[in-house]
Structure formats: structure tokens, C-alpha cells
Length: 270
Image 1 (cartoon, rainbow, N blue to C red):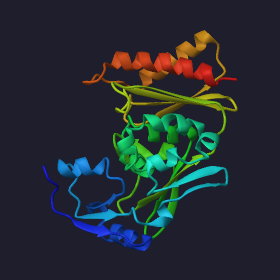
Image 2: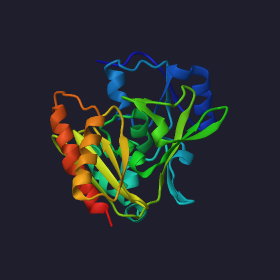
Image 3: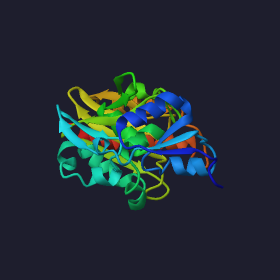
């Protein structure tokens, strides 16, 4: 199939982007890498009035380490972040997860913020943003706001972004602490059946799970003995409300949460 007709705007400056969003609201869509949006356009699952291309805006193509956080602009491709020299030192969890994000070809085009905007519950980048307690930087013609990841994701491919807002950047707290990532998928690069990320905290471990619920879910685990940890992970696995689908049964997903979760919690615990 081919997309429905739309107006195309190749933005030359940020104000032009914001003006289009202010004018057309929900009938405008931002395109950066296009790895998620283009298939939706071709299948006519998305039928925007206006498509706004932001990839030529240098102010959105920056990766900055400032104030204890790494800020990634809306036009930064996943491959560029993976190749950033400071990644392994400042964001080791992201360094572990990014190679699992699609394939070399899709990472060379897809953007970090595009994955966050798409909000697929099986995607790795929303999971890492949630695990690290990151934030999404939203901007409209009227205001700017920073929304924590736990308040940004609202359900299956749903977010709290308003129709006139652009995801200007996302920020990941620089976290050199012990961390771990693991994923089970049918093939490397496919969306996860279950993905887990764990980060050491002052009081124990934060575990994030993707691919099971409608969005990434995090849970704090204090220092527990083996039996108590098993019970806590079992309760967590059931609270995620896993469902059967063509890829896996709910029971299989719960088993993976328990097994992978236990391994990761042990791995990052002091």
C-alpha cells in the first residue's frame, strides 16, 4: 500500500516545527528516522495532514553530558548514541541495551526519541529510560516541560504528550553504578518477548520489565534473602498481567520475569 496524501514540511528551524504543531495539532506528525512511522503510513494506520521532517535541525542532533544527565536530542540516531565515546562510562545500561535495539540498518536511521515517542512496550529504549528514572523534554509554541518517564508512558503505544508538543530531547541520569540487561526474543533484533533491566540503588535494586505489560514497569527490591526474593518476584510477575499472544504464553512470560529478574537482581546486588 501507499500512504494517504499529506503535506510535507522540511523544517529549517525549530520555530517552524512548533508552528506546524500549533497549527495542525493531532493532524501533524513528526518524522525523524521514520523506522516506526513509515510502515504505519504505508498501511494507513497513520493518516496525518502534515508530516514535519526535523532531521536537518542541528540543535536537535546533540548528545550532551551536563548536570549529571545525558541529554539526547530528537534527531540523534540510535547508531550515533551507540558510537558516542562516553556511553559505556556514563550509561552502561544503555550501552548494554542498544545493541539489542533492532538491527544495524534500523539503528542507522532510527532515532532515540522516536522509539520513546512510539512507546512500544517491548522496545528497549523506553525500558532503559524507565529503569534509570529518566525524563522526556517536551516543547510547544507556548511552553516547555520535563516529564518523568513514569508519568510519560500511559499505556500501549500511548503517552502523555499533547498534540502540539514536540519531544525535543530525552535525558538519562548518568549512572555508572552496577547494572544489567537481558532480553529474550525470537531472533536477535526482534521486539522482546521479555526484557529486563536492573540498576543498583542505595536501598537495593530497581528492576524494570518490558514486553509483558502495556508499558515498562519498574519495581524496587530491597536486600532480600533467596526465599523472600522468589516470593517478591513471583508477585511482581503476576501483577504485570501477562497475556497469551502469537509469540508466547502468559505463563512463559511470567517464568521469564521470575528467572531473569532473579539473575539480574543477584548480579547487581552489592
